Image (tube, rainbow, N blue to C red; front, side, top):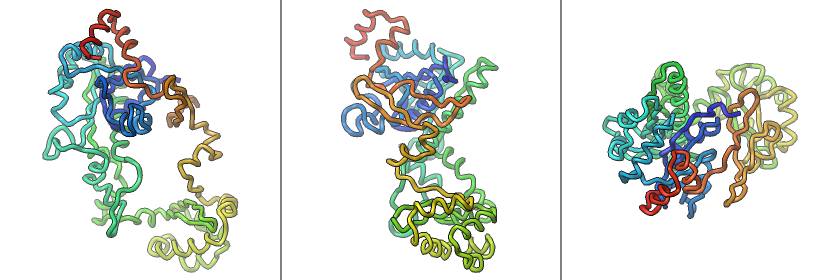
Length: 388
């Protein structure tokens, strides 16, 4: 099901934020054309050598690749023809660069008044930080997010990119909102998303705590409040528990553990929050007595919110993941099988989104130019000038 069938998106992005936003639109059926510099393309392509790195693949499914040098006048003129056919233009670059390249909203809106134009920046279009370069960890640091995920003398960065991903998701939401409005008004919009604002908007609960109490929740503050635990079983495998606030889940855990003494030691939720560190130790002692496969049916029988901690390589074999048919495999004619997760949204039960594999650099250049009405002679002329 292609909810966005008929919507054309021009993706001028590099790395993660704009390419991810464009890919999300492509997963809903939009025709996404990735406009790239000839011979180079998105820098993420070369992260593992060549032009088809895993990092590039992860953010560029369901797109067509057009190589076009828009830094030169003749290339920009071809791009202008493409803009006239587009619904969305999406880019991520420092403020001012788009104007220097002739990609600013005012100029492109003159070519297409119905255009939805989305600009993603690190810090916004103006202000004391606006001209700085910004990548994922910069967004995590400036927003306060990073401070919640480390403590002590070894503050290394853990986990995958988060501010890049959240900025891309917010950009996708903004574009969809502008497209809905355009369906009523026939007018386009300039959508602006900064990594800083996307991250701050995601910190709803910790910021609520700071604003209400003046105190940061700290590294384990939310885990204590929500009664979340990671426990290691006898065989070294782990479980994630999240009891939240209903008393029945605590009681179910006590029954599953056959540990009534815990009810005496931690008589209510506030006692469990205040004694979180001690409770973690008590649970660690209990769960170390049995293998994970023994604990899982016990927890399930007592309706405890839990899940086995999957490694990424385990996901495709997880029974629920298999039931939901989350992963698919598509074939690229040159690079072979590409495995990826389907879109997270289902429309009338349909989550199919395996329309196109990540494209080779310039793979669809001739086809896109033919759609603009350029004949073989015109395309050859562009190629002789090294514009494509």
